[in-house]
Amino acid sequence: MFDKFKKEEGGEMVDEKPNVESEPTKISESSSEIGISELMDKRAKLEEAIDYVGLMIKNLKDKRTNLEKDIEEESVDIKNLKEKLQKVSEYIEEENQGIRALAKKRQQVENEADEVGSLINSLRDRLSGIDRIIDTEGSKIKRIRESKESLES
Figure 1: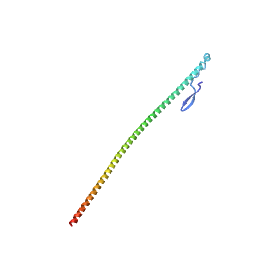
Figure 2: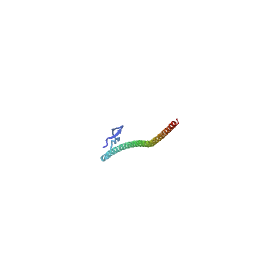
Figure 3: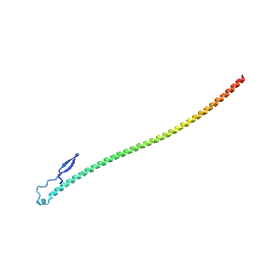
Figure 4: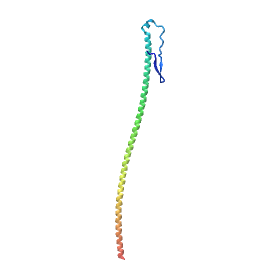
């Protein structure tokens, strides 16, 4: 029934014969008649099969443990990457806020520059008006002098 078992050695499966000690050559007739020796032989083979299954279970548990370890390591790595990405996202948001603040400040400066430009134009207009008044008054004074000079001569 269990003549050969497969055992894994170095990644390959090889046949292994069970280590069952040979039964003594002298078996009494009574034990032969009821089949005790065959039963003992089957029991020994079953024990070996159970040992082999136990080894397979241990190997599977070791593989599962290694997989769990690998998954945990990957989970930690992914969490670290996620934290780094969160920090990058926060940095980007800070930079965007900074850019918005700079744009707002630039707009304020631009508005002030427009106000200054308007003031300059207003003052230029006023100065031009004063200059015209001075020119007009200067012309009047010149005419008055000319008329005085012509009266005096």
